[in-house]
Length: 102
Image 1 (cartoon, rainbow, N blue to C red):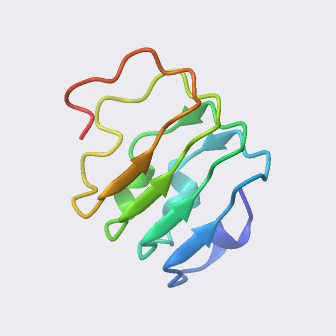
Image 2: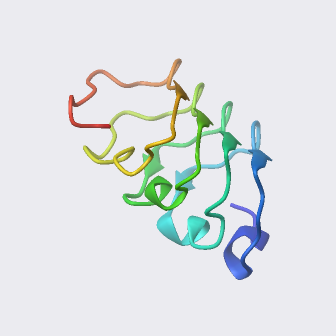
């Protein structure tokens, strides 16, 4: 994950990190980017999303995690994302999605 996301508070509403060979999403990566509305992470190598990483992005409306290596997700991965209206998890290795995921 780019270092600039960790070091200072920024007000980005749109962030495209497609095709960056990202492997893990850790909660420290999202401490200062709470205002993203559209977040694109497709075509990476993400195999792990630390809970509650995404929960900190309270304005998130669109999230694309397609074409990664996700096998499972924490049961509360998307719990605090009340504005989320679009989620793409296609082309991952998910075999089960918990009914309490949202």
